[in-house]
Image (cartoon, rainbow, N blue to C red; front, side):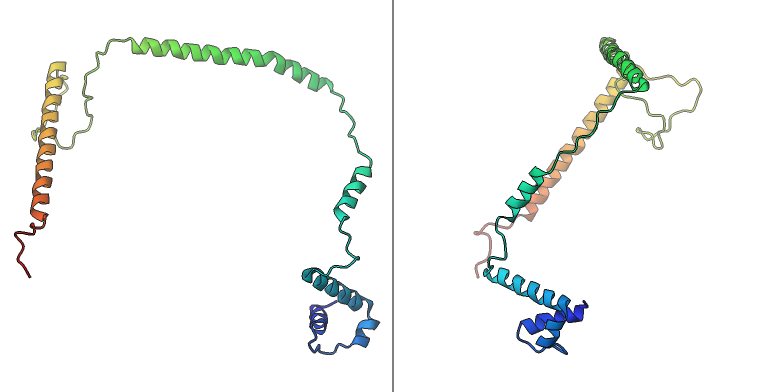
Length: 194
């Protein structure tokens, strides 16, 4: 049945005029008559006027019918020779794999402890490979005979850098305080009265 016929039946049901549809047409066509009946049932259910044609225990009847059906069991699969061999290999390899993981973890622990107990002969400040602008403002000499500064010299350089950084931070804090003082509104006594 076409969508237009369904709309015509719905309009006829709602007491509107339907184009080319009469009660005689509904009685002659079984499909239209079934649609008419379904639309009436839907309207009754929506208004809460469902009659005895709706079975309230439908869900229970379906559950009883499903429970009465026979259970289909799948046959057990017989293990093949390949599956038996595979199971034996897995049974053998699993403990070996666990032992290998435990041995690796223990080896890493030993190496970690050994590395932690080594005396630090490494300089405190790592050397820079690429220095586009030297820190002191003077270019370093280019030579194959370049010697690494001593550890005491590196410590002194580090202390100087930290002192410069502290001076910059202190100056920055002073500027913030000064700016805050200049931006503060004058007190009520100093403001002119209106």
